[in-house]
Image (tube, rainbow, N blue to C red; front, side):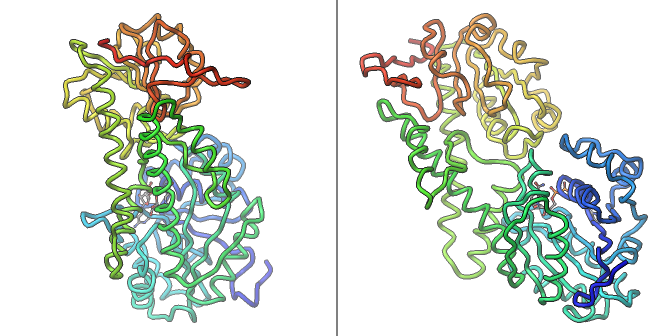
Length: 477
Ligand SMILES: NC(=O)c1ccc[n+]([C@@H]2O[C@H](COP(=O)([O-])OP(=O)(O)OC[C@H]3O[C@@H](n4cnc5c(N)ncnc54)[C@H](O)[C@@H]3O)[C@@H](O)[C@H]2O)c1
């Protein structure tokens, strides 16, 4: 095995991964798929057991097949010390949930670093520790580095290296995001440590991404800032959607398309629809506010985004109530429960938050989601019904809300709604249905988030004259 004299670490290095959750498990498997020898460790014995058997239950689709192709390069460690002693580089991918103040808890990170530090005491050769978990700026310098130095009795930057290496992947496309990242950010305690990580990424990535190296704190801030900027864009697009709804002929897709064409803005996350959710965006936004305050900077901007996001859920819930005015014992069909498509995550999902508001108003809810039913059931229990299919969900309902833009909802036809629903009415929160078809079907009421009640019907070739506007009525009129 070649020895990289400059870095002081064997090439290719053996890599241990601490934390085999939603990010750590695909990361460990992806590393093995790119030829690295990987030693995986988690405190959850069942995960280690399954991995040792070559299984990755619950992981996104390409992960099990990647594992099949690379399982000879993955082994599991019985304990953290073994993982450190049999590797040259340790990636730490444990959870950092928000605490009550909105800042990230580092309890799991500290536990792992204590184990790694103690094991480093027994090592003679250089070891690199890489923190991947999302943390508040300053965590590596003020918590991780002192802890590792104390536990190991060694010096960071001399006897071992420390890097902060955030992931920017999105759930639903984890493997693509890992193997073909748009950017790689490396915070480094010293340049030798950064260099080792660059070499790993050069072998790991299938593409040739821009790799930015910086001090630890800037990398920590870059991670949350990127997500906060996205939340800002989403909140703006949702505000625009609300505005379009109140403007005769308003159409958020038409307006946001124009914004997206400007390279200063870009088209991503400008759809306008329901509020952002999931585990990262809301949490990173609140952590940014906390970090701003700690650094003596006004937290107003990120806080306003958080408030606007919550207000958008209430606004859509009010819209639903309005649509149901006059309907006795209303029942809605909620299509989509996850915070976005291609994932089963329902945490802070707009669909779940809106469902809770509607339940308080006495609305009966039937739901269907291609992947998120099990997770939703953990949150909402038997307060709502869980249907086996879209048809079953629509059956007997007074209003259908399309709350997650799943691919399978895009091809639904007016005839299905007409056949199954008690009162065929639709609130299409992401405008996934074929609008021209649905608006022209006079036997049902179609409305959409981001589209004016007075809709200008557009097709590929012409804009129909203003006189063709059709009033989208409420169910009672
Ligand atoms: N999931 C994502 O899409 C994503 C994207 C970017 C960043 N992140 C960040 O990555 C980190 C991990 O996220 P996740 O979603 O994978 O979390 P997760 O909760 O799914 O997984 C964390 C794993 O760490 C394990 N663990 C806890 N303590 C441990 C210990 N002492 N030793 C070994 N393993 C231990 C847990 O058992 C669990 O399997 C978080 O900080 C998150 O913010 C996640």
